[in-house]
Image (cartoon, rainbow, N blue to C red):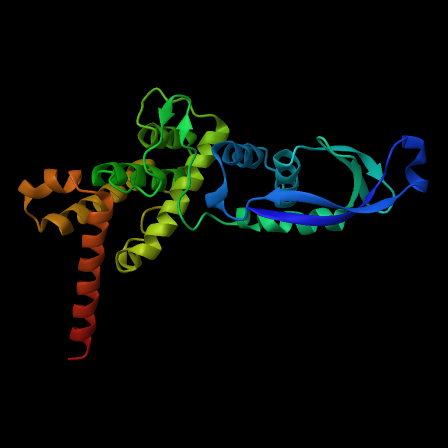
Length: 274
């Protein structure tokens, strides 16, 4: 959290005396500086604004207004706005001052470096944001659903992901919640790509997994093949180990896959030198 001190023009009452009784004061605005600092209510507001298809500047300005309980009373000359903060006098802020303040929220322009999520939807509690201690079979399932969503844009797939992430078939996500699910999964994939770089470097790309023009059946056949390849790599072809692998912690399973991918790459490089 950062506190931004803005020098502004203060207009003391009465209203008719605004232009002749101006004073310069400092106006404090508090804003988070990262995804990780956002509360559930703040995350929900961000996703609700994303759902309205607003510009990035509009989203950040509305976050600034809502999170600091500001009210825009009107527009003044010279691109200034009359702002009221609860419990404080009315102030005049310029467009430039607002832009400078909202630049703190530029982190919203990218996915979170560490996965974040709304902790509850109704009474349904979310699993660990980074999938720590989550069974590998659950990760494989939601990963396939997420890849399917990227290729088909079907919201029903996000609903199915939400049912896993919030451990209930009865969870009722709103459009904002579904956007939150998307951002959670996107951040998780980005995080895993950095944490297990050897494996994800060798993993099939989106082009390998199908495109919008593919038949849906063909797409999910490719996803199934990718999943089976991951399981075979961990079991070494021993089917008796599959149940144990599927119950393994996601991070542990991906650590093993990452190590195997590194071994394969080192073997390939060594073979090319001979």
